[in-house]
Amino acid sequence: MAKGIPTILSIGRLHITAIAALGTFTFGWLFTGQYLWGLAGVSALDWYLVNILNRVVDLKEDQANAIAGTDFVARHHRGIRRGGFFVLGLSLALLHPFLGLVTVLRVAGHVLGLAYNWPLLPGGRRIKQLYFWKNTASAMGFLITVFGYPLALCLPFPPGISWVTVVASMLFFTLFELSYEVIYDLRDEVGDRAAGVRTYPVVHGESGAVRIVDGLILSSVAVLLLAWGFGQVPWRIAVMAVAPMAQMVIYKRALARGITSQDCVRITWLGVGLLVVYHLWEVAGLPGSGG
Image (cartoon, rainbow, N blue to C red; front, side, top):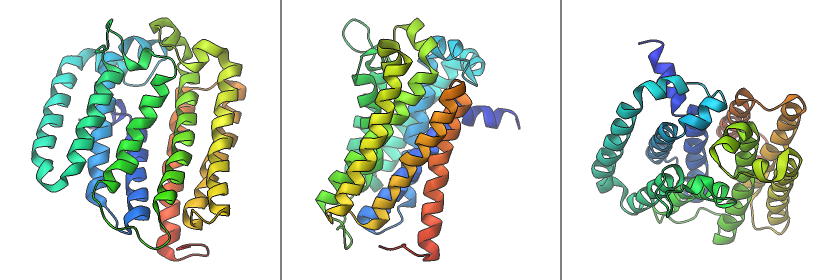
């Protein structure tokens, strides 16, 4: 049992679940002035379910890319699929009275996740197999949970926050998140090529994909700093530009020796760690907090 729990957490891509939940928590606080613990928990649940259901249909790619936990998923894929859909349906029914409009976004997010992972499109295709739309759909999933969930509560903005602030933050986040997606695609190039998944590394090669990553990272920083310079984003949001710059350093080092699954997990946990430090800084009232 002790060994089973880490495996169960791992197959749900705990690092992605954690950063999605913390993203919801962080932007929920920024845009409402409240700590939305329950909403962050809902985000974590939704991303965990999306990830484990993704693992069931990604066995071929994951085996080729030596992703941890793939053997476990292969042995228990029927139980994982049934359990995932059961928990999803139960959570939608039980939580709707407390979430209201958020439930609509939850359903939309899971429909997107199913179309992304499962062969539901014409010709038995998945969104994951479609050039450009693969990464865009994944980024949309994060936008739904990280921004859509808190905004669906229809709470008033705190001082210093406007719809321009929200749009600028969303653009920053989208560009930054897309850079994550392409870094993961660099890791998965062998398996994706074998499975016919047309990612940027598969279509443009490593050098082309690296240029795309660099452009996304630099653009995300530029958007945030320009919005801050024009007075549309407060410093407490502008300081998030540190995250993509830190990612640039880490991913370049990994790229020099060949990006591995462990590198991608570490990069994601770096983002989780930076968000934790961000909140601890704010709570402690250290210089620059509250601005």
